Length: 413
Image (cartoon, rainbow, N blue to C red; front, top):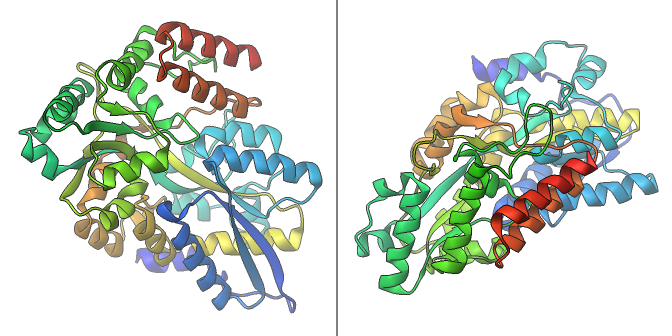
């Protein structure tokens, strides 16, 4: 019934009344190790089955920050893409600075429907794609949570029980054991062009990233404690590796690091790359605190300013939300499906049973909160947090560095 429901909700996505081909551009952030091949596969299949629409995919390096920077330049030149991936951290920044068509407006204009979106997406899922004013900016596409991947062969060799890794204090102790007994690093915490993983650490120590007034609030005692443990592992204990994301993941898959705290979207890459027994588990918390993780991934937003291209982009977007399309996407990445129908589908449940490394992320969804998104100067705010991370991991005072970053961000808002 769910498959039939999706077909009815998104009816008409393979048809076009146009007699000429409409060309649209899709901007994404998926490198080959995180879904790039799946993007190309999906675009190729769509183009094959929709003769009046031609989609061209364009990869934007440097993750969502890089895409936003490129989108700034594109808007200034008047040559914007038609559909883009927007990371959750930039929801408010995107809605404050760019022209776009809301999915609600697209559904009403092209489908004459007011209920298709709410019928197909959960309230929680849609909440991730709303700005500070409660307006739906795009549709959730990639859902992820940070989980702890482990080299079970290495842990067993050095007598480390996985149950001890449920807290960051336990991870720190295990990392010391690994370093002392093998000389290898104990853990890698992802460091792309965002601070999502570091925010997850602070949240699971009871810290806030942004308070109810919309101000940065991460330089609290809880935030400082989380970062201090992180800095100690990198500089004092020398048990955590401080390196760019691609290199850090290579070190884990090559057996040089025992644990990797990163997005579930790395699951497929890890499964295909390792020669040892690997598994995953729920993200660690700090002792005495409940699990809270920021949702990762992205939404799809319509940036085209041409009516014909808007319609074509909406057609492509709806096709991406078909159960089969989402399963292709999930298999190629490890992301979780954003729609109720796909999440509950027999196909996804079968996939989940065959890929247990994904399961912890599904268990964490109930503990997921929106990734902190600062408004108009959100691009600068994210960079300020990245700069603070890099200063801390090269030796600066944790409390002073976080306080300076927090004050700078609040002065910009």
